[in-house]
Length: 227
Image (cartoon, rainbow, N blue to C red):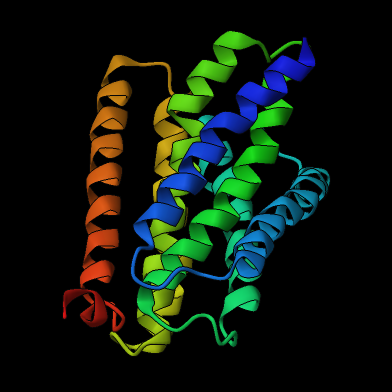
């Protein structure tokens, strides 16, 4: 039933949240802030869906893979997530090391992915166990990995690792572009695009894990664990 499907929809998001919590190993974020990050992610869904419907009504268009991938999905979703993340973290005193940008971005992104996954998996036509398995392997981890990229550049902007303006722009632009390509390759029903998708998936995981390790090594709280 839908209850079982909802549980399956929640499982990959919960796994991603646990993974990110473990990776934040030198100075854990307060539970209240992690919960807020997750709730902000849930709230983004309440903005993204009506905003998407309004844009479709205001700017009627032919639904093509290119338009859907680059404008009506990735553009709206990553734009709203970035704004929510910025207002949650930028002036917060708990954002006190670069890795925190990734932690909060992943929690927020997976909060949105959790809601989106429940909508798809319990859908009377599109949903079901097969949808749950495919989305657990691709869609939910994808949102988490886009969150890593967003949080990486937000962390660099916050702690003076490059031009602040450039890093803030990249905090939106990089996850947006990756998300758009991710969707485009999936929507195009062609073997060559599936190969492109496989390469992108591999790069996303490799780059995401490297970004996390890079900020773990740069943590100012790491020294007390080494000494």
